[in-house]
Image 1 (cartoon, rainbow, N blue to C red):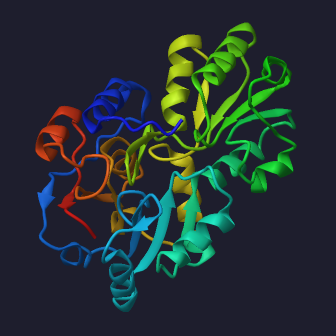
Image 2: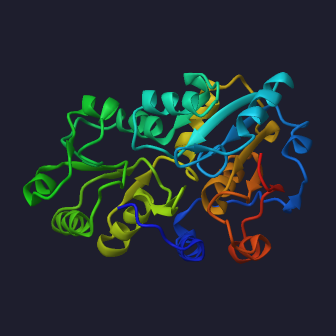
Image 3: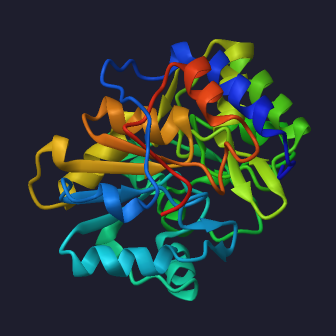
Length: 301
């Protein structure tokens, strides 16, 4: 369901859901910087969100690849920490190469990987998966999962649900999932907690949007595996060389996922405002209204 919505509506919905997001006492003062590279001297490891920071949809943001190269020349460690869960890792690596980035597979940590890591700790189940039936299931196929479509019996047979991709999701399918969970609550794991994502034609609705609707309607317990929740950050730090969290910088475009997530992990944060979820909004007002302040503010990396 790639319906573009208004950034102000998305921000208001994130704020409505704030009590469900991680608590955090470590927030910054929102100091603006003219150039991204001027703020990185103190940091050893720099974590980048993807959508709105490195790319918008399938389009690279101008200058982003050059900034990554400059950071490597400065001997900084870089990683992508992305809530993009709808595609296999190989697909994402191909995309980054196509867009001019030179990330290695270990430098890209996705919420799909965090989901798979978390689900591996669960008993074997018949999983129903929110995913476009036309897409490659990739690693999720190894779970013996079934894609959720329009057959109510598939929902009722599932012993748990994985919400990983909202492309192709419909109101009818959302209603089937809600009804099935009302009849019989079962575990729900969310690979992409984002409410929206920046695309070339606006902000698309993502699995987090529908997961919170499930909570609103059914009260079912939901486990979120991506930003701003800890699982994905724990996975990223496990891959990086040992580093003091205070020497880590999380860079993103969304206050309630990237900035809050980085802050709750003990990292410094930088908010990018030129291409992502806050585009067209008054940034200072958004920060004040949310109560979530980054350490740094830049237009782009």
